[in-house]
Length: 116
Image (cartoon, rainbow, N blue to C red):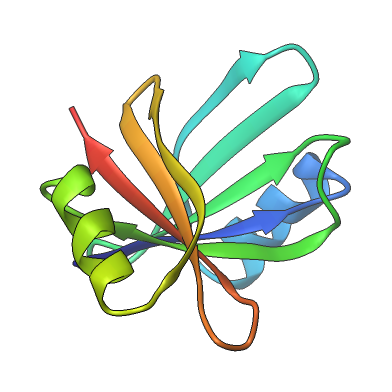
């Protein structure tokens, strides 16, 4: 597993993108609208990890999750379960691959993603 991104739910996408680009020195990698009412902007800087900003009305504003890329999501979830991890969302297909969620002992969400 490797850290791929940190997801932040934002109230104002324009202000958030301006902060991360002009203040923090990130570049916009891509922006898309996967469904009505949802905007996602991916920001990159040094290294492989990115910041994912999401504007929607379903989630609380703030840090949402840390995303980790895996090569075999089904095997990873099975292994984590065998070690006692709390899986909060079983693997589901998404537009770029498959996604599952695990929760750490503090309640932090960890997104596990396998890209196509």
